[in-house]
Picture (cartoon, rainbow, N blue to C red):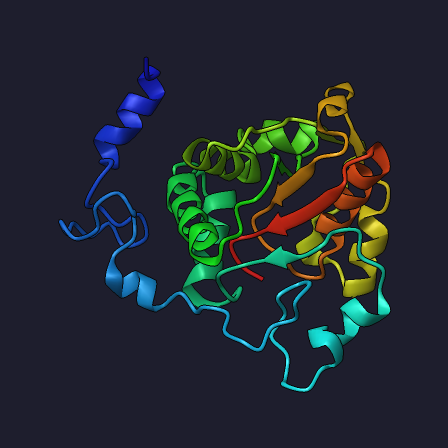
Length: 238
């Protein structure tokens, strides 16, 4: 049974035919939550891309790796994203996180499910999300990455595993330099006791954006150190 809050939200934002971004009604939208006009302003990542972090690169890079992935140890196998973090995508993600638009998880979740199906990026034993510190969770009221991860889990029938915790409150990554982001997030994540069930498995880590990759990499390190065989990642944009 749906909660009163969910039912009320659906009265304001119907399940079908309404674009969450511009609120236009169009029967062609269906349950994608995004109209064609807004989707046209979401800039897709196009090849050539770094095969590890999906950064746009020039042709001719050795092993199709960007310089950062060549020079820096990464604990995750690969990270994929459908969009570039700019323009309307950036604005929508910001609204999702900081303007109490929790229902956007359906929009972004659907985008990632379609992307994963179209690219064959679905062979995982478990889905895991980047955790928030409890104080930030109390401030925001929801974990934006967890909502998307659970949506993907349901749609693709891949079990969701709540196995990561943030051990300390860090400064917002968006306010840090590249080097500071790495230092800021080091050893900020640990696995929970429930992580025993994902040992020797293949895990998909879900986050909202990939910038320097520091957060994804630290979460992957915690999972690999626990005994996970392989960690891959997906974000809305990078």
